[in-house]
Image (tube, rainbow, N blue to C red; front, side, top):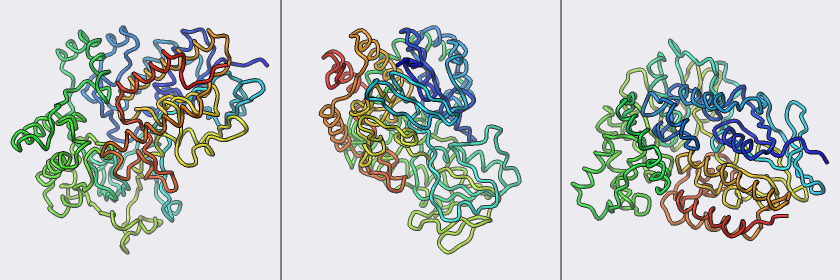
Length: 529
């Protein structure tokens, strides 16, 4: 049987683009299939007001090409969505990637043909493509979660989802706006929407921790220093759990004097960003240590928000870092504005959406526009939207009915020649995504080259290796406080989704070491034939 391509890559975000680049370099024929009209993945779709990366721009970038590192100029400490999308387009142009990308096409089905050892990939445009390998580069946060609230279709005004924002933007000037959700996208967008809207009503189910970004234009002297030492910075980052070059204080919070604790927290608060959780080494390992950090942030909320009742409602009660830590610009101060109202619904769900607003706690709220800042069906949602069938006609949905099972977050037993970039069971969302993506792409590319060198056509994870890895991922999660609360890390935001801690929490260095050991032992845990 004649195949159309050696590999089909699904998605043209940062993962899909680099995968294409590596496949070309190895002489594999490849086609990338992308639902959008352009490259960029999550930064193509997420255009809500204030969308910005929470990893510093000089680190949230490719490192595979030193010349690319040197030529690109970031303008801000935390890059905005438009600037990141501009970067993605620059990469696509620089490496002439678009000629192998099929845009405005969504993969609907992928079926493994056991007799010919090929994948049949089908699309919503009627394409039927045969490929030896399929590589899912779909992203971890790319399947928007639309809440199942009664009456949602009845709302007569415009409804927007932060994960699928209109490309032309939205002007809320003179409008009354209702926002459901207070996760990362809401925390970024609420301050900007509040500046435009006549009135903004925020419906909060769960209060979240957020650390000020203290964003600013990048100092040219700092940029020169970074570029002069980029290789060393990248090398240091790979030795740290999150793959981000930051200073970790190895002391214990609970064993440190109160004055020293406050000094550390204040210093990190003043600097801003995700490094706050590196104030002490045991914040996600010790309840008492964690409480000192949580109390510090709750105290800051009380200082910033003038109304004590609103401040109390905004103060999270769960463990800090258990859910995704957010990075903001003026979020809590926004609730001091006279045109912003907080409605705390933590103990009572929204009853229904009405044609002119919504009803909760027996009270009706009205607004012109509705914004759903309700996040994503994380890590598995995008893959499960595709009808994927492996050996014996078993679907991925069936295999994952009790939670995702992968080997290294890269492959699945029963699904030969199918790879996932930053899939469940890999560090992914707990790390700087760009180096995690590059590590996965490089591993997959080297794997395909090794299969070809053996004269083989099939590689598949063994069930025993997969089960052992799933057990290790679960055990690692159980050793930290991160698995103790209802978060999207465990699928708690999606009704009916199995409650499993999906990412690997053992850290990027340990994960890389394991991946390298698998290769060194002749692809241990895989059948190659």
